[in-house]
Length: 103
Picture (spheres, rainbow, N blue to C red):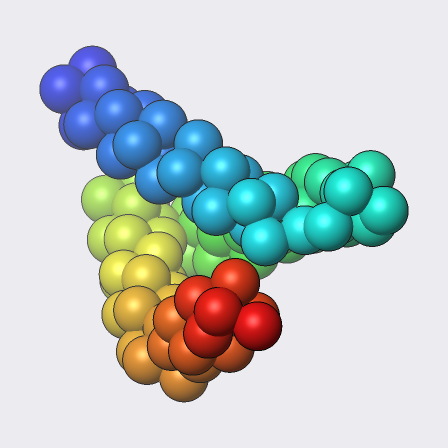
């Protein structure tokens, strides 16, 4: 499990830091505190929901054995990953940022 956990940890580290920097770079100085607080709150809510949903799936299937429970949890996580990847296609392009338009 150690190589898989190291890979996931590295991937999260490479994704979360740039996400935070990107979000905060678009905040004005007047609302940077609110944006930072909202981002941190949503990250914590997302983490808690992710653990809760994966726990429900895992422990719901645990009566059928650990391999089945792990497999179902993995399928759930992959489905969520694909869903989030598809949702990123709905994000606005760089044109939504006033700085990018030069105004």
